Image 1: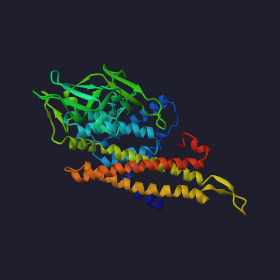
Image 2: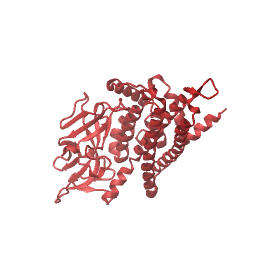
Image 3: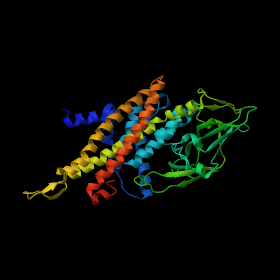
Image 4: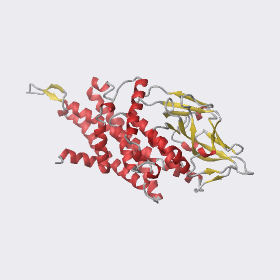
Length: 409
């Protein structure tokens, strides 16, 4: 018989509640027990082991189309990453980068030649990648990225280059150690016969960065960002390119292509519309980040609530026993509104994930609905992350000394 608590949890979990319940069970395995070491070598090794276990269990298949070796369950893929945030944020980020961002770029911006070559190795972790978009000088302003990809018609290659110090790819998850290939976002520069070279805006390229032994390839310089607070298992790094050549076929060419002679073509004539259409296909990452932040907030509030139902402080008038801190109105007023907001944000997140799934699995998605989804995803990501920051801090403060322990944060 289903209990009231189970009914409530299923309602809060939404459309993919079965997925969440299944992952909750898997995360009870000792191998997925959260680890709180600031030692990046230990933490990165542990997360790599966990990721391999997930891959061997087929955890990544939901995020990829059936014809490419997956199951095509977008909602389940987003839900899985969100649930990892309730156990270990390092694992959430590593899985999200490998299968959501890097894999998502190949899946959504590439064409058949890329799908056949890369998708199955990405799912199985035979190919470890990173998502090289952010630069030292540009983060949110993706249109202004400085990295260039200049086409050389004589060799039918793109030349990937970091022309300025601020063009360095920065804080890229996986770039410090594990990734052998990067999905690099760069300004595509080419010229057709008789034309002057011109930029056609930001496009994505598959660029090898390391050999099988982990050494930087010629023209590639990587470095380690080292310890990142709260994410010791993530090997964030930096990448500089010095005229690195890749084959013409390494352009992810769903929305723009270059012919052997250098001629550029695209099914979308407007450069601005082409750019936003390209970024729109990567919306899954934005949805996942917001959901993961919400999950982290709920974990913090759960810990704070359980602590407040055990911790006692001071005696009440005319009472010899000490008072539970949860019985203090000021404590209730700190936690209860945040718990209520967590419920509201989770219901909104469930609706967003459902809409994302329906649009990304539709044969002919409505362009207006897609734009609305992108706006809602951006807004809810902000709301969830703001809420997480406040909720986690509020949960830590009344716990006093225990609130400063790494395992508490």
